[in-house]
Image (cartoon, rainbow, N blue to C red; front, top):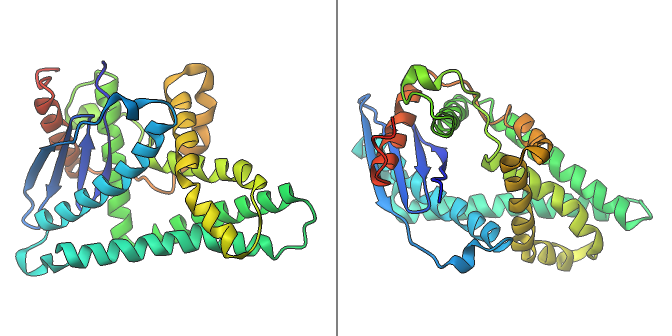
Length: 284
């Protein structure tokens, strides 16, 4: 089976993963690049079935992504500043972030749409979807104004360039990564956009208003994730359906930046470690 690589940006670094391993490279406060890697749990082929693999992808994006971010903080920060990465403190921050996301991107758009005077359920669902997309886009734009987010988005671009270079059999050097775009069709940002769009159609058949409506929408997130993941794969892997990837690539203009050479070096360190673990370190 061809090696498929994904990942994400973390604090001062890049996490890349295959089906079997995770590799994390971070630039420390001393300016050095440190690397951490570990095997990933192997699941049965049952979880590779269409729709189910989308649910697993959503879980991995949350669980592995949060773990990688906590490890990156531990690796990058001096010892006296590592309290933010302690399991209890980090778990509290992650929980608050999850509550904020559910409230901001599910409860608030539903509440706004339920109080509209639109007569048709499809119109209400469309309004809810547009409100959710608008809030999400405004959130990305606002958060992206900070210097910390700008650096994270640059590492996001470095991660994508590393994946592009591997997929296109380019030279795995800083110069080899530079020509590739910082956007990638299999990005998590594109996945989230598909989730928002699928909700517009699916939620048109659900009751509107009250806490029951919010609860049903949260409960159906695995279904939405499954459908969204299949659309994401379709657009990324099949030329006839490439147009499905275009909105996600456009949205990534808000979540990626052109990385500098030092950030590309970090992404290359993560990629080389992952290829070593997969037994293809001599790929180039």
